[in-house]
Length: 298
Image (cartoon, rainbow, N blue to C red):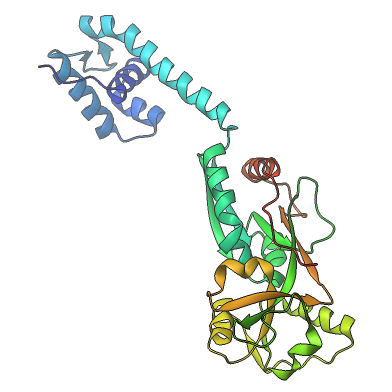
């Protein structure tokens, strides 16, 4: 049974016939001359006869002349299929570097990444996890192309709101306050307070300022998972965003605090330079998805 003819072989034949040589055809196709030669040789083996006269210039044989119109049709049809697919996906290609806080990476981004992969399969998204205060700096410095910012203002046109998140007390389930509907921040003073330095500090201090209560954290913890582990071990209590709910173990709880403090989450690009088409496309796709259901306190 003759070997099967494939599109790469036909594309090589068309390129060599049009360019008049293997070297020029390789340049046109963006591959090596050896790869072009191998593709044409494989085509000739599949057909059982030469399709090109090697020379200067290289030209089709009688068999090659008969095949060439059909090869051009196949190559053109494949290009048309790719063009239709590109238009269907918004025509976006490339890589987008996206920065976000830990809780957003854990909870909101998986759904967005899934939606983006379906809408724009030719765009690669690389995630950079960072602290709230780092993200805007990375974005404006060009370290990343887009970011989920916390309480950002002003925001460039095209930014997408991902919702509002409220601050909650993190306690072991056997803590005396664990069953309360809400907890006043002053009631946490009986325990050692574990402070997350990842960007929530300003929200926590704002709650204590509104309550008129002195804030005296016992430990300062940079990594959110470390902080959760320490609360789980009974070292102390903490306050963190409700979005962290999926990160905490079953024997810990999140309880809304009083006074209530919220943070807004916005997906955006830089303010100091134009957005790439890929960034604009991803944000446009995100704007068509309902808000991510960020838990909010009272």
